[in-house]
Length: 506
Image (cartoon, rainbow, N blue to C red):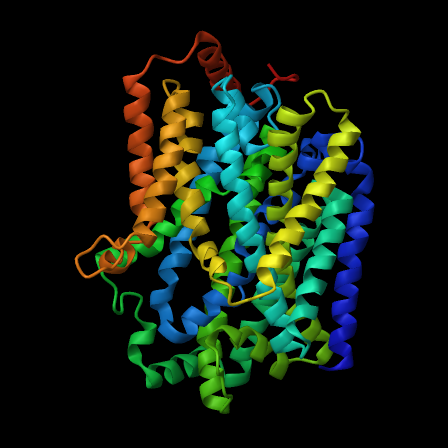
């Protein structure tokens, strides 16, 4: 690896650590500051933080690789994600920002569920927290594996060194700076990803002679690569686009809606976030297609399609620029890891420690416990990631569907349906999670196949539908929510209608 590349990477790491130290003041005084940034995020930081923590390495590795292999038919997932993210901004963002303030200043997603339904048993809070901690520990380990493999393949370092470098930098700025550091670093990392996904496909396109030359080359390989409907069936298109349903239930994304400065900032947040997402998705898809044409015309060997962004970064640019572009991949990976670490930490602190161990713990003690929880989750994730072939890591590929089915209908209906009950929420969460697991793992078909293998339907589709039905049926079968629960719901509705929010929580 060239010296210039290492210099750029060193500057990137120094910037991330510097942001962590800068954010220390905002995250020391109370748990709201550490876990939610004191609800002070501006729309630009909130939107790019949500986007960067969402996309991870998939944006720069997985999606270009899929486009390289399958052509335009790979775009259906991107279309579904874009529409899902837009719906998330329109339906969830304004309501969740307002509701979490009015429901006694809820700081975490399980805290919101608990206060939304005034669940005195705390069962809803505990189960949802457990789901978050378990799945995000696995999710985080997957990100660390990606970081370790990136250092191994692109930089020639030992896998274990890459693992510890990735984990060490993320752990340092997340522990020190909390939510504000995670959000500010996500903003910077989102900007890096944005520039990289414009620069790489455009420069590669210029090198091969423009759009006409690219189209001619790709058509010469296989005309079907330029057909959006090549090999597509109704089931495959629905399954691909159903990825967008997952957005409603991703705690590390929707927590940004809770942290934005005010309800009035949500439209600006939406416009910035969706513009960023549109450009980066097009850039990622373009990288795969242009990369295919470039590799074919220039005789570049591509052993793994998912490395096409790395290959183009290496062959097209000066080492200083290559370091910046490789930092974009690290940015995508690290932004997701840090967000997942903090959400897991907040659940351990707010939803376990402060409820069952120290109910009246001082704020500074909770902040310290939050930092220790970040460390604990990190160590567990590193342990799982140390063996990249460990079978437990296979679970994380289904975590998006698990979160989407368990939490998605619950989040939407809790914000939009006054008649929803605590038991309905519990039923929906459990049914959604169990459906996804059964669909993936239970060999229920005659030949021993799972429903996922036999039907070709992405597991979030049945999980989301059955979770929604369970919430409705159980809620309608039980008693209506208490007057206090319904009055808070009405107060939120009125605040949204006024496009304003109360100065103090209810």
